[in-house]
Image (cartoon, rainbow, N blue to C red; front, side, top):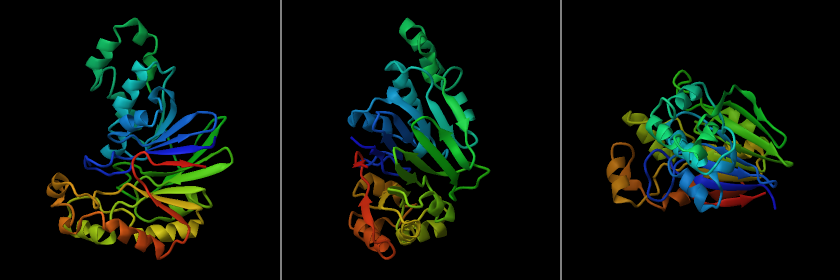
Length: 299
């Protein structure tokens, strides 16, 4: 067996019928699990992949946009019901403690906490919904007997609203990097230097980013495919997995209707994935994959 990476969610901020939101599960050879991001649908896909949320040791939230964190209450409560031992370790930017403090006892899910907590079995593992939050800074974010996780700021939304982190994980003689959400930046080149796999956002093709920048309807600080190829080539990554696709490939009538103010919906469709590959290939000649939910990569 080898390190196993499962794509729990490969979509962006809309509730996409074909993709869950951002989430990646790393499973080491010894069975330890580490999760990057926890967007909507990721807990369901974890179970589909036959991984137990109660056994996930550490979750790193790259930033506090909803499509990267909104499944965390479900993830934690499921772990509680499935007899997690101890608190989940939650790594994230400033504000992560505030986010977690307002979820369970005394927070949004206080009624659930009090109702389930009335049972002896649930009283025995209350720590499962008392996360061990560690707000991180650039550098070494986490280390245990199995892994080292390093992080650095990337460029997505103003830092005073939420710091946004890219991540590098090293374990078992292998390394991977994950961008979170970001515009092209040198920090990701450094984090991804020589990794076995770089998982990097590719939210929109260039024309969609330009459209959003002009329309002032949403965040456009994302990485276009052409720039993604430059990052991967410069970093010398062995394999590139493009992910966090912003619904531009969707054929859903509802997504197209909802997306009309946000993107040029007349251009949408699966054919754009061919354009994404073409544009990445302008600058990157290594192994390339386009992520889909439940894709598994073994290292």
